[in-house]
Length: 232
Image (cartoon, rainbow, N blue to C red; front, top):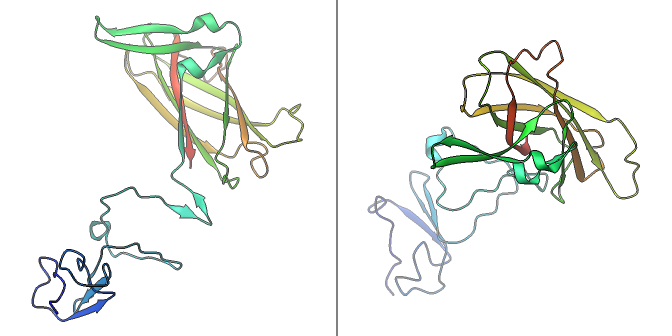
């Protein structure tokens, strides 16, 4: 019986072959699929690998993935991320404030809402396996007016579960960003834990730019393009 094909770079080394060995299906060896281990400790497999314990690597250069990587901690998918664009942001004053902003003549546009103290509202469902961990909120914004100053983002974010009262003030998440230039993309992230995170899975956000607050010194209009929510 012919031996299974040996991956390039491993030829001539001592091998342990389990389940027919790596690439055994292509070599016509039964059973198909399996694991090869050489004398240097390299492993090659064409099947699935499940690790219940700790996996360590001496360098990130030694870890390569050609498919999708999903990182799970305690059964929770920590790769979750959610983008909410301007079209999904409800302005408390009037939905008509949604506007298409021309960044470069006839070629580059951004949908945005005017961010001010009146506030914008976002509602979204958190993952079913959300474990109450801290979250990261990232603001994407620009401006076509103004020349200098800082922007103060003041956000209430609260998580609610079935049967829980939503009649609460909840938790705040505050952060400051500096104006870089007209029609520049500004990206600012901040982390924290929403109110009710331990039991809630429906997240509500009330986002405001407090232009009258002492920390807000920007002399123009802020255009909120969107936000991203993810694990911190």
